[in-house]
Every structure is written in C-alpha cells, then in structure tokens.
Length: 176
Image (cartoon, helix red, strand yellow):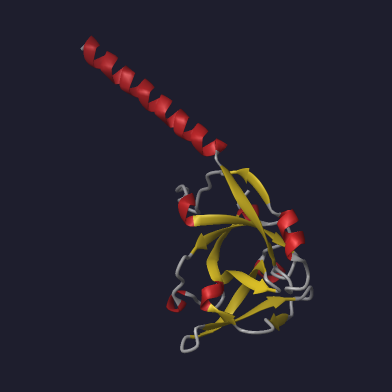
C-alpha cells in the first residue's frame, strides 16, 4: 500500500512539474501583435501602423465556455482608429483573429469582421472591415466601416477574397 501511495505521489509531482514547465514555456513565448487600421486606408501610413505594432508575451485566453483557445489558429492584432465603434471595437482594442490561409467565400457571412491585407504603393496595409455581401462569381467582397456618428461608409472598392487574412472572433478588451 505504501508503495502504491509513493508511486501515486511521484506521478502527481511529475505531472505538476510538467504542467509548470508548459506554463513557463507558454508565458515566455513572444508574438508579433500587428496594428491594423479601422478607418480609411489614408488615415495612417504603413510606417505609422508598423510603429504601433509590437512584440508581447503570447498569453493563453479562454472562450465563453472557459475552454482554452487554441492560439495556433489565431493571431492577435491591435486596432488603430475608431471606425468600428458600432461593432464595439475601439482604438487600441486587441482582437483575436481566426487565421485563414486559403479563405473560402462560402464560409464568410454578412456581419463578419474581416482582417484584410491591402497592397498600396508597394506597401502592405492591414485593416478590418465589416462584410456586407459576397460576389462569389468574381471572388469579391463588399465591405464597410463607420464614421464617428455611426453612419455606414462602403469601402471605396470591393476586396478580393485573397485579401482576407482572417475573421475577428474575440475582442480581448471586452473579456477583461
């Protein structure tokens, strides 16, 4: 009996040590937090957005049911500007985006907040927009943003499905 209790005690100690090591590994891992524009593409330069991006410790987050979110499927971004206030996304909010390497237009739905990569003047810009509708035959998306009074402004042109880098799933600032 004492031998079984000793073995159980050793297994518990090993399990706790393994858990502590995993937690230490997670808390020391760094991630790049990309700054994205929530206003018009001319609101900030690529250099300004890059300056507002930063490296931070990759933290674990839980979903609404209390389960850990698989961070390998998500990217953390920080918002610049207030053109998504109507969707409760504000300047400096941090969001978790479900990354899509090869987006499927049928998986997107009106109201989704899209994380987009736009190329302009040879530079990459990242922004978020709300999806209005899809044009599957052209592989295009109609999107919009809001002004400070909450009025909807359609994006200046449709976005290609290939510009979608992911869909916003969590606002971390609302979860604190």
